[in-house]
Length: 358
Ligand code: CP3
Image 1 (cartoon, rainbow, N blue to C red):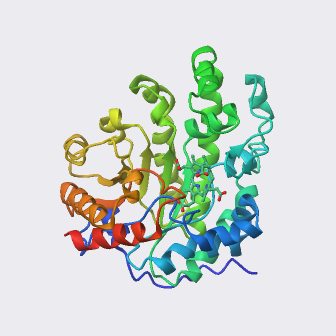
Image 2: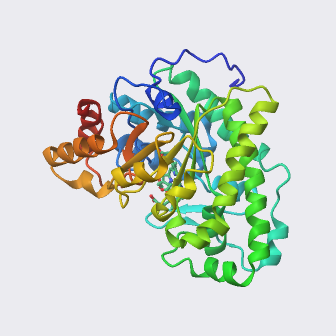
């Protein structure tokens, strides 16, 4: 299949992009983190036949599961390309497996700082060309219905998985590295940052219309550690992508930073150059707006657990949330990914209620 044709269908619903740029919208745009996922039987049907990373690596399959939520939920205002943040460690030469019920597993995590030298930075982005192919194919198949979001994990979050060898409740090995080997940690974070910048530019060249950077493990960092180990790289990623797109004469796309658990540092996040800041559910919308000011879009932040409540309760909570954020510079979402047992009807009620709210 030829993925190179970039004459994409015209975008019919630009609410998400308008909100990210601070332009007026007719309705509040809504999408949901992990909207393509295990709560959907049609996703599970694909996963029953194909390994997780096979879906990521096969553009036709990645495109199919990306489109699945759009077929069910007419109120969704965006799609996010189906992939995973851990494709970057894979492209650097590490093995990552997805174990059902357990999540990602690295059979050989980084055990010693000397192993940073084994990571294969050269050619990493070309080894991720399948993500670009999936994006290009999806931009065609989506027929301009809604914009397509590209994404990456942020350097600290990726480093954590590479050291822990999977998800971790304590991040104790990673914290040990921060304490004992700060120089090597910064060397690794800088390496990841270089790869991430080029990876995101490749996604835009392939057709991504907005980019989200997931700093999902920020909840393990104090404000001081966040300032030392996360924000300098988040800032470099934003300016790096902007500069390269400028040099290559490619149209700029808005970017979102989502630091889960980073509610203690919204003032700092507001200075990183991102158009949108994603919030988890621990942050109060009115307080967040006071801190970041009027020139940044906020995204979030219903507790994913609320989708286990009754439809009428979900509706009330959603409308209440949208009222607190207001219609200007706001994108409705959950405060983290939708969870696997969520009833499908809850998604319908959530997305519908956002559009009804104002
Ligand atoms: O719909 C979308 O949002 C796009 C797809 C997407 C996935 N992962 C698919 C996925 C996105 C944006 C991600 C990002 C991701 N992956 C993050 C950052 C966002 C976040 O949730 O904080 C992280 C930390 C990962 C790493 C990862 N991948 C974990 C920890 C897990 C296991 C947890 C779980 O939910 O099982 C995954 C697996 C994963 N990534 C699944 C999906 C749909 C479920 C696995 C499966 O299908 O077997």
